Length: 273
Image (cartoon, rainbow, N blue to C red; front, top):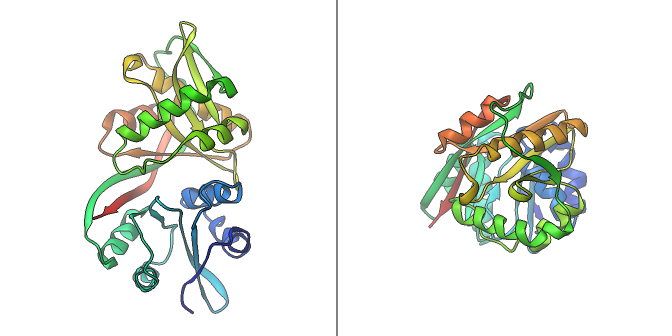
């Protein structure tokens, strides 16, 4: 059977979510994006696809413009067919994100050349370790009064992160504050860093973004807020706490490993010309 595409999030959830939940760690991004679509975010012109063989789902994909196509862990031989079907439908695809070999296979099958890539590593939390030394300050859950500041910091994070689509953040940040997903680190009576972690889904929560503005860097706040948000979601019952890091940033990778994160696998975000 060929790939099937829909924009109906509820229909897609019934067909594909049980398959995605078989591996919530490696399928963390499609799962959390699907939940956001069902919550009313990123739903405009969403493309939700799945492939069945012998009556069973064997592959799935998600894309919400202007973001990249998201590939879960799917059989490698299904990727070229996915690319062919999307070309036939004249779907605009700005890029692809997924496990490194699958993202590279899709890129090789796509009709537009690769313009750039960011290689990432997926980590999962093992035993959470306290940062040493401990930064000055304390953490708190973000509240509605933080909205403007966190939108501005989110925009700064987007500007610094290569390969991240720049989108309006107000609705997204407001919804995450309402779900108590954002945590602020305060020192000297003012916010100096923030981090997010998704509400648990299938026992999985993913940390991100983690941002410290330039004027507050070098003081341990990034490590402190990463530890604080990780401790929060684990205390709330998440069995798997995950995060992605840019492999070109060795400092970030070492920080996360120091507080207990261990590598799962490498991923890529590839953009097309």
